[in-house]
Image (cartoon, rainbow, N blue to C red; front, top):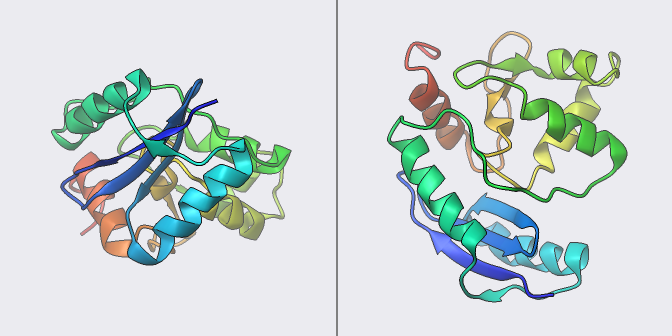
Length: 170
């Protein structure tokens, strides 16, 4: 099976993306200290070194990201492939249910996935999300509303939240 990668420019910096036969399996901000590890992880997850190339999924993703950053897209439809532990998969599925322009706390997500006493585990699963923006981990904040962590750097998390709801952060 061939997995292809591309770089996609965004208003918040370049994104590294990989698609396989069933959809997008990596979409991350191209942080120099993370790119090699992310591409190596794709090889571990899917048994394939991603090579430069084209994919209908990447074309669709590029169009949807352009529309999202233009404020014209509220929900992504591109197919994503997010294998993980059963707990991670429940958390990532719950992230996709957070509406555009809204946030949830780690505690809210923990409650929604039936793990009330595990907000830290939710945080770890959130941090393991490999599909930035589309699986909107940026919409998860600390209990008091503070931004908390973000693998793509906090300034990007803030920018994504402001894009979705300008009055959300003051």
